[in-house]
Every structure is written in structure tokens, then in C-alpha cells.
Length: 389
Length: 222
Image (cartoon, rainbow over all chains, first blue to last red; front, top):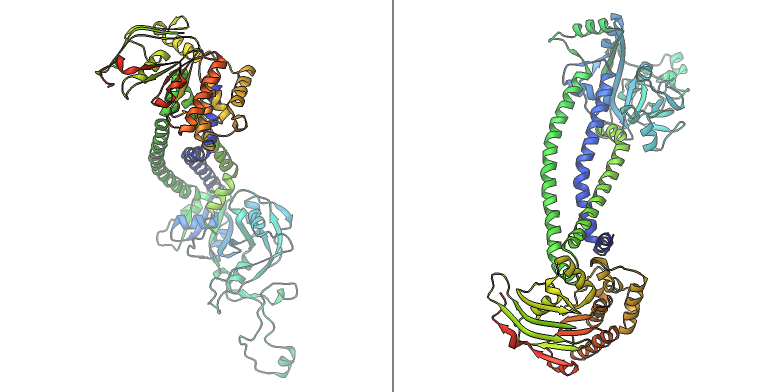
């Protein structure tokens, strides 16, 4: 007890030095713990979402970009594929196609244009409000609601792709009609709209005031439309009928199409249909793509572990040197203690008490940090996997 | 109180030889040891305290042959019987004056920190004029105040013998006299003898006896 009493007195008096040592050692212990927790959670989250998504249909190109965009709504922009491909899946009678359009964002969160099948497929539930019903409406993920402090009755505006592209995409104001219950997946960080709303944002569809009035028609006037016509930035019951699309819908773009085969046999047949190396589309299995990614992450983790170990050894050596120098500086104190009658063991116990106390405090800090990481790992990993959308 | 006879000591591997044929210190006596640097004065204090073991001879303190005691017993004997006052005060910067005074109870075997010990510490501090500074750390005390704390620490265990190694060496002339008077007064109250190494010849008249250590010196410390 006396050794502990003196150890605490020493550490308390030299609190700045003690604090630095505790923080340094705590950090050395915390970093590998936190890395392990985050990587394990990443692996679990990545794998779980990939395993829950049987197949993804997309344009030929990077399988990883396609998977990340379709599953985690990342910033990757794979080549879009025409909706005709989704129709082809319907027509095959082998599975349900769920198109996703992830080209745009709002308030820093990705806008996901899709169909109502997506909500059933992901088993998403509405915690407040209702689901999508009308063109122009938005249902937001739990993190979006929290981060933007928006809810049912508020509105979101799509971000213009390019401020200088005045001829391009106009922002669309979307009323929020529902908020999703949290899932700790990328869905928490998404703004869901009907895929047709995404096409409106893209400029394929739009609504504007009438170019020709009834009186002009009656008078048989030849009217030419120009930029003076007001284009609607918000879809309302009053103007919804004016919204229309130009071109054939089966040519409209989707980022990817999630394909849910009806059974194993259907899945096998579908995979066979997209094996043509000359084809413009590819059908990928997310589990395989993500498995490869996880393998790569863990190879990087091995490297990270080595780097962490080297840094830890160097930092511990520095801390050890500081402790050793501290003991050297206290040679006079040790000599005094011995002259007064202390055993060598008592002096060693005193120094050991200080060291153990520092290590315990460092361990507590590392564990507290690790517990904090573990508690928030799913949310943080979800945010990390959204890759800054 | 202290009887040294035929004491011989040398450091391992060194050419320093210390021989003390005879030295006595009576109960309550105040003996000053003077001599040139390196003559072995501090070595003698360490031998009497039982920190070093002599090669030959006896060191009797209050009837106990310190040299013959096993290590653990010597430490216990030292902690309970001998008080040390050092030239550099040897206070611990991370302890308050009160904690420094009670330090022997924290580290020495056989000493129990109880209410009586705490009361003794308070009384010594009161008598030494530092009662209002007990909660301060050494850095907040003057040198004279620090040495008073050191004297209180040396006497708090009620030792029979106080060994003082240049206790006034770091003090100004006025403080030297005051501190030495204080040490003698507290030691007298405690019934302790004082064996002091000093270079301050102006302080020698205050001692009962002065021993010129040069006569014991044979060789130099290693």
C-alpha cells in the first residue's frame, strides 16, 4: 500500500509527464485494437450485404465499381445500362430485376432511384411517415435524417452536377414523405426516390408551363418554345401532369440492376446468359467480388499490423527510455530511501507500482477507446463504406 | 551510545583504507567530525549507519553490534535507531513537507504510521517553525525551511542517534547557526546523540567535542 501511495503521489505531482506516457502507451495499445474491430466489422458488414444480394447486372467494366455503386452507393460511376436490360430479366421469367440509379446526391448523401421492390428486398421499414407513392417524393435513411435534421414534411434539393452547366441538370426539390428505421447499412445514408424521379433530376423527364395556350391553339398560331418557359423545380399535385419524359423508357439509364433469381436453377441460367465476352453487360456475384476485396483488405491489414508493431516497438522503446531516465534521475531518492532503511525490494516495488499504474491507466484508456469503437463500429463502417458520398 | 573499536574498511578494488582505532559518543553528546575532503568522514557515517559493512572491528550502538547484524536486521535497526540529515536535504519533490517528514514510515520496515507518528510530525513541525507550511511541496519552501523539514524527518522516528552529513553546507551563515541550534534542540528533546560531519569551523564551538578525522585517514577513496 505504501508503494502504491508513493507511486500515486509521484504520478500525480508529475501529472503532465504521466499523462503523456499514459496517452502514448494507451495509443499504442488502442490502434491495433481499433483496427482489428473496424476491420472485423467491415468484413462482416461487407460480406453480409454482399451475401444478401444474389446478382448484379451492369454494363461491362470494373466489377468492383459496379458492386460498390449498387450495394454501398459509393461515388464510383460505372457505365450506365439501359432499362431494357431490366425488362429482359422480367421477360426471362427467371428473377426480379430491381434497378438502382445512384448518379446524384443531395446534402452530401447519395440519391438512390429505384422501385418499391427494393424496400421489400432489403426488408426496409418506415419509422416515420410513409413509403414512396408519387413522382418527386423522397424517403430518407436514418443517418440522413439525423445528419441533415430533416424529417417528414421537410424537403431536400438535389445537388447540381455542375454549377456552370446551365443547360444541364437542374436541382429538383423533393418533399420527404418517410424516414427509414436504422439498419446500420448503406441504406441509412441514402435518399430514396422513385427511379423516374432520378430521371427527372437527370433531365430526361421534366415539367413546365404550357408552351401553347388554348387561345393560341384556337387562333392557329405557330408557336416556338424557348428558354423563357418556366421549368418546374418541384413536383406538386398541380404540375405533376405536366411532367413527361422524352425518348423510350427502355433506353433510360440505370446504374445497375439487382437481380433476385426465383430459385437456384434460375440463377444458374441467368449467369449463363451473361457469359458472352462480346456482350455489353455483365452479371456479377457480389459475394465473390466483395470476398476478393476483403482478401485484399486483410492483406493490407497484415502490412498495417507489421507497421503498427514496428511503431509500437519504437514507441515502447522511447517510453522505456523515458522510464529508465526517470529512474536514473531518481537515483538520489533511491539512495535516500536506502539510507533511511528501505529494502531494495521496497524501492523496486515503488518503481514497479508506478510502471504498473501507468500501464493500467493506458490499458484502461485503450479499452475504453476500443469499447467506443466497438459500440459505433457498425455506424462508422457504414459511413466508411459509403466512401464519402 | 556509540562505541567504535578497531574499525577497518576499504572499498572493493580501491586503494582507500579507513582505520578508526577507537571512537565513542555518549548519550546526548554532540560530536563534530572535521577533516579534509576524501578523508572518509561520510564513509564512517555510512559504516555507523550500517549501510556499509566494515572489514574488521565493531560498531556498537546502544549495545548492538551493528556490523554483526544480518542485512534485514541492520535495515530495521537503522530505520528505528538512526536519523539522517543530508547536505542536499534529500527531500522528495513530489511529496508535501508533511509527507516528507513521514516518509520513513512509508518505506522503512518495522515502522508503523499511526496517530502517534502523525502527532510527532506535527509537533516537530510546530517546534521547527514550519507548521504552516506542511502542505507545501519542497519547491515552495526556502532552503532553510527545506532543511527544517529534513531535520523533522530525521527525528520523527525517535532515533537514538542522528547522523548529520554537512547538514548546513548549503545554507547561508545566519541560517547555519539557526538550523544547527534547531537540530540540537530537537535532538535534545528526543534524547538523541548527534554525530555531525561539517566543514563549518565557525560552528564547532556549538559541539561538545570535535574530532579531526585526518588522523584516521590512510589512502583516498576509490
